Amino acid sequence: MTLRIKPERIVLYAYMTFYCIILAGPIFYLILCSFKNYSDLYVPAKLIPFVQFTPTLQNYLSPHLRSMGQWLLNSFITSLSASVIAVIIGLFAGFTLSRARGRFFDMTRSLLVLAYLFPVTFLVIGFVIMLNAMGLVNTYPGLIIAYATFNIPYVSYLIKVYVDTVPIEIDESALVDGCPRWQYVLRILTPITRPVIVTAFLWTFMWSWNEYLYALMILSSNNMLTVPVGLATLQAGDIASWGEVFAFSVYYSIVPLLIFAFAYRYFVGGLTAGAVKG
Amino acid sequence: MKNTFIRKIRQHLLSAFFWMVLPALVFFFTFTTYPVIEQFFLAFTERGKFTLDKVIQVLSDNLYFMSYVRTVGFIVLDISIKFGLGLFAALGLKGAFRGRSFVRNVTLLPWLIPVVPSLFLWMFLYDPEYGLLNYFLKSLGLVKEPVSFLFDINTAFICLVWAHAWKYTPLWTLVLLAGLYSIPEEYYEAAKIDGASPLATFFNITLPLIKNYLLMNVILSLIWTIGEFATPWIMTRGGPADSTHIISTYAYWYYTYGNVGISSASLVLGIPLVLLLLFMFVRVLSRRVKT
Image (cartoon, rainbow over all chains, first blue to last red; front, top):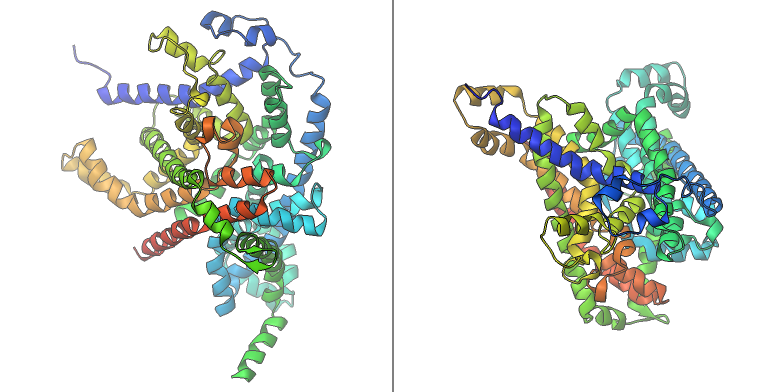
């Protein structure tokens, strides 16, 4: 009797199973643990109690929820604002960098890639001191400026690459009809470039939603913190149990997960735009 | 000469393009140039006078040297893990198999979860008393005593790297998959006709064709990982006995003590490393455009 399953398939399925368990397993474990109360969680891990425990919602309804709600609000405000600013500014910049000719714009195009590549961690000290001089430490605008600044280059790049594929005839016919360029961008180009605008917006939002270092250094009072910084203070001070930390992490993670679930294509599009085209 | 210059400026001022790109330029450059200059001043001057004291202090600090080395180690180990795990996953995901969409979607989870919760997750898994990893190690009989992953100077660093690489492996799998898809099927068909083994196909067709693409993305990963702060800071705060400090945590540590001079100096001295990587990226990019 011949073996019906090729050995390659066995290796494939084995690796895929391994891959899934390693990557997705811990996440499901996190969700599982968010439903465990203190006594079920703080035991030397045993496999049976691992899955046999009394599920509880108390972690999701802990008294720290009030702070968490404020932190979620702060994250939303900063991420949304930064995304709006970055996209508006980046839309015009991206369009220009796609169409404009000349040495000035060539230079800007060259600098664009270097701008979004540069790891912003190496600017953090100077940036915070700058904000301090502007009186914007521990404020929304302070953090929003940081998030918008660091995403403008990539947003511009995304839009530039996309507008490169928009036929220049559309520009020309608008110009011939006497439409000023900026109005063309707003009225005609925006609907055409809607996919990349969404991608750019979501990219900036996710970047800001995840960001830790700048939020940590710029924000100081508890009611101004964004979720990552707030959660870290809860965990570090042993103020909250792991179960609570995980439950709040679920609250925090729902947003990116929902975004991804509904805007899947925009994500992968944003990634491969940079990677494949180079 | 001066006339054409002024004319050029006037041309720009009248051009709509110029005004449309100006907000981005002003916004971006204002808020990045000031920090760069400020950090240089903080690193190289003391009370208004130029001095190399802080730079020398940083350069002669063994911890800084180790942090620098660990930064390089971090990014190299990180990409190795991502590449290793991701490559096999991408090779597998390229062809159809039952459950492919499920695998593809569910293995994106580590990347979708925000950074900070993913770190908490691994801190809990690594826990000596309550962590699953120790449970598995003990029940498989591999260790007698629980391994204190994050509290042991021998294991803390690699545990950090793993937590970070784990999170970004899905992204890397996607990148590799995109690269694999860019290879025209004809090459594979020709290889099959010639009777080439899968391994030979891989090394003689797949790899050479995506070499530049791979290299570009490797350097990209290095550049983006070099500034990583949350992972080492949240998991170990610089580690058991300072054994997990990297440049970013070193700088932050001194900042928390109010020493912005040392902080800035440590960042400024790290910038050449960044520039080196950027230079390498540009080199590979231009090579790729040519081919």
